[in-house]
Image (cartoon, rainbow, N blue to C red; front, side, top):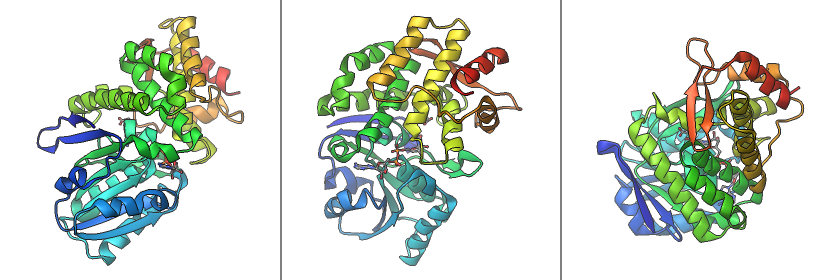
Length: 358
Ligand code: NAD
Ligand code: GLY
């Protein structure tokens, strides 16, 4: 097992990465009182809920099983968590455990942020995407019909347990979606990691456990550094949103759940690379490298055919990075070096939108 630390003073916490991490030693020290509520969904619970329960200390253990899917990441479904907490009389020392992918992690974290004005929670991410990104850093929340992740809070977990063996049951399409976020770290911060990903992509797609462990470790290491510097996203953390402004527009336009988050991010990243090339910041070879690595990970590189430039502009206008009506995008100055900027010619943005959506 490898351990990383997210350094946030008295709210610091460890990330454990490895195999077979469901054990009492990794959980008991992070359970504060004598009550636990496990939040999971109808796909993940039959696979791992009993195993998790069997290693928890002898406390009151309740669970709530939500329907599976991004379309259920809503305030309505969050109420089911609050109902269960109140029915089972959980008090302020309770610990919530998120057992699932990013949807369950984001919802459980938000429930923990709100219940009795804030209780502890533990992240047990079970998708690659949630292991490399959403379980770390304390962004929690739900979607609104008018915008993705628009209702939420920053609330850090007590511990993150990324157990690589649970990825064995993950569908191929979901594994690829997670690889989109892994590729993001290489493109934003680390060209050596990008080289490594190119060299090892077929092994990663083939679920080689030691390659996956390294990809998760390096991704979490980069994310932990960024979160420690800028927990509430007033600066560098925004760079982690490479591809997300275009991607969130795709997810919202297509109806939550139809395009996977990672798939939308993959296309959004290609669109950001296209605009970066039009601005003269990266070469055409660099652009082709971005397209190629997404394809190697079995990810889409073209936007949905029914989207128009107007769809993109309307949906991107509600992005959380918009300030005073000014759209800001994460673009590439080079592979391995991203910037957040509003300094782009709107005509070039229009050209990118027309290239991908018309
Ligand atoms: P997800 O939670 O919907 O999980 C994907 C699918 O895999 C689901 O059907 C799920 O039931 C299933 N699944 C999960 N683990 C499994 C396993 N081990 N075996 C078999 N099936 C399994 O999607 P996701 O890609 O994990 O997360 C996407 C969500 O994360 C989005 O809502 C996105 O907005 C959010 N997100 C949040 C952050 C953050 O910083 N908080 C960062 C990135 C993404
Ligand atoms: N996934 C982007 C962030 O956590 O900031």
